[in-house]
Amino acid sequence: MTNGDAISVLVVDGHQTFAELLGHALAGQPDLEYVGHALTGAEALRLAAELRPNVILLDPDLSDADGIAIAELLRVRQPDTRVVILTASDESALVGRATAAGAAGFLSKNGALGDVLNALRTAHGGGMTVSTDILARLLRSTSPVVGPRGGGLTAREDEVLQLMAAGLDARAIARRLGISLHTCRGYVKAVLAKLGAHSQLEAVAIATRRGLVRPGRQ
Image (cartoon, rainbow, N blue to C red; front, side, top):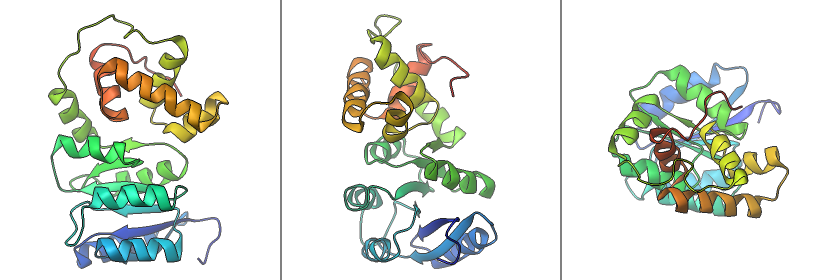
């Protein structure tokens, strides 16, 4: 790394030209540092271990591996490295798999470059970013859940839900609330169970449909 204060980014994409163009864009940002790119899942794991980037920008459609499975491996092997998914796929199920794998962002390749750059910064800061078009699709595809307006959530679970909706992941929520990561994950699981969701993003989508998310929480 040439700049110890910059956010180091590894690009993983099976299309070399696209990966190189992204690398060029990253290199032009004073607070981001492009450290290289991988074209396959195997290469991604090798370079991630070698370079220890802060954030990995990952296309899940790789020639030799399921990119979401690569994200899951990275979460186990390098929990401090954040993964942002950048995809051309419009499958809503992929969003749930990505968030369950611990991804800190899910973006469409049809979006603006500025959104990608900001998502990398947000991921490094402990937050999560989802493209508005992807979130809209998820909201449309999520069936309304019948139940108590409050979802049967405890006060603490509701607080966790509001922070999830603000884009924070479990680690950032734990820090905000002054609780352990293990305890926070327990609250997250309880929220998901009570809302009938399979991922944090789906839980936020369901809660939004039911009016459980209060705007303005930071």
